Length: 274
Image (cartoon, rainbow, N blue to C red; front, side):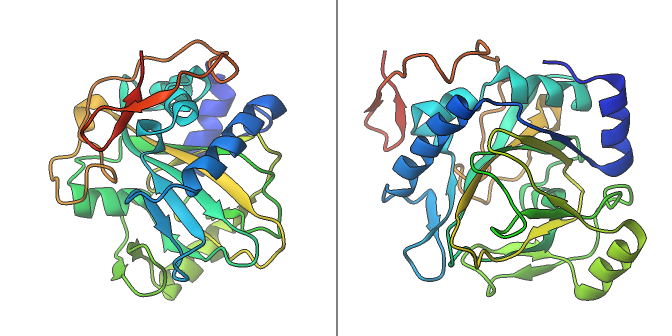
């Protein structure tokens, strides 16, 4: 899949691009079932909310679930990012983020590259996120908020918040967020299941708590140009991956093809069985 020049220009101007209904209802259903299976697992990669029960995010799901392995190589996600970073990409991070009904907690205002540069020593912001909505994202169930144009000035000062939620994050202060929002406004990324949002790694973004009775799941692929791979390895490899090999896209219908079962290879990480 290729972006048009108009889409590329809009991405560079605003820092994000919404692609409505890029995946079918059937494909979203496959991933919704996969998310339920992943969240039910007791693995170190599955992070819970502060209540210790509700899922917050499942890291590296492409390493232990077949549907997410295929999604991590899907041409509708990989090829547009390759266009924008001008070359082959590897998987820096993979998250299946939940916002469970009533109990889905906030993600504070932050920049992803701010974390990747500070914690992982990624050389440049030659990386980005592409997010697939597994469920409909509405104004009620904790949609992603983006400040348009906030990617243009590089990395802002941030503090390391290790208390607000169960996952530590480099967060911006209220004054900086207010300044940026006064200038660029706030875009609420709402859309049907199967919609895709691409956003620059320096875009300032957050999401509100989910107080509604409707949960939502979004899968985030953080893709980086292979020449721009991380230089520091202080975070677990299931958070910041060490495999810098270029991703080879699968056929476009890969999510609807029969799924290969997984089998333990003895290392504690599941791999696809032949």
